[in-house]
Length: 125
Image (cartoon, rainbow, N blue to C red):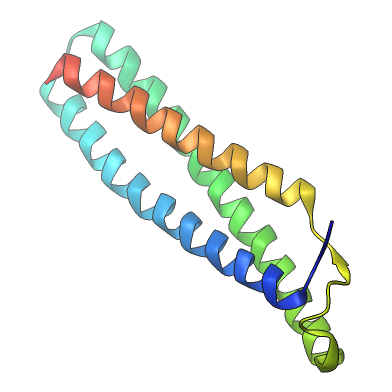
């Protein structure tokens, strides 16, 4: 599907805000996990602590990669807008379905992990 440069730029800006939110949430989730680890020595609990440490690390790395990709996409859009200022609002660019799909997967993974983590917290606290 064709989109305008302006619309794709707004989508990139939304994604950047969403990824920044995820990044900030990860700091909070890690702090909560650290509190659980400090208060529990049960091997069953520590197994889940390690699981979430690994999962949070993977998600954080993926968020960083997505931020990089979104920034590259946004920079290319801004460059194209500068080169073709008369075409900013003309539907002429194919939307990046791959990046859209990756953002949806990132968001779904983040919220599923957060839900799983809160369920874990409700059991151990």
